[in-house]
Amino acid sequence: MTNKPQIERPDLIVPDTGPLIHLAQADALHLLHQIGGRVVVADMVALEATQDMAKPGARQIEAWIEAGRQPGSNAPVLVAETEIGALFLQARKTDPDIRLRNAGELAILEWLGSYVEHTGHAGHDVLIVYENGKIPRFVRETGLDLDTDVLTTRAFLELAERRGIVASAADYWQRIVAAAPTANPDINIMMQRRPGTGGS
Image (tube, rainbow, N blue to C red; front, side):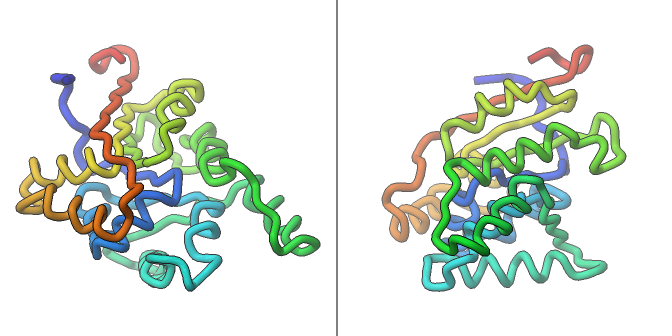
């Protein structure tokens, strides 16, 4: 277990659909804003999570995104436009059933690669909540010049409990497992710090 301090009020980035779907099923999407400031979702992740309204959590996620995109929202959501997302939308015009492997993850990593350019905030901190086990490696390989915490959904709930935001992370996790037994059960945290801010 690391003894590095946890980032306070970062931009919170969701690079795959798992956390959104499972938090929606547990009526817990609001927790993302209670730990983070702005929540960032790649356009591909938003598409994957909401393109089929019959799928679990899709309606809740769509409503949450729309509310967060309203000007002046106190729970802001940025849907990050990416080249991958644009290419997917173009391809879907000719093949509505097209699927791109790892498209959501690759889209958000494309966006992260030019994060400072997008935000205008050099050194901005980020917290990444994921379920796809490839995400930590993707983040390491991207080489972000940012203080970055990378947590599984379950570790995110544990963080919410430590900060007094929820009374019991276990209760929320049980809600998720009841709706989605295959949810990633790991409690994993990876912390990366810029040189001179605590190491990696």
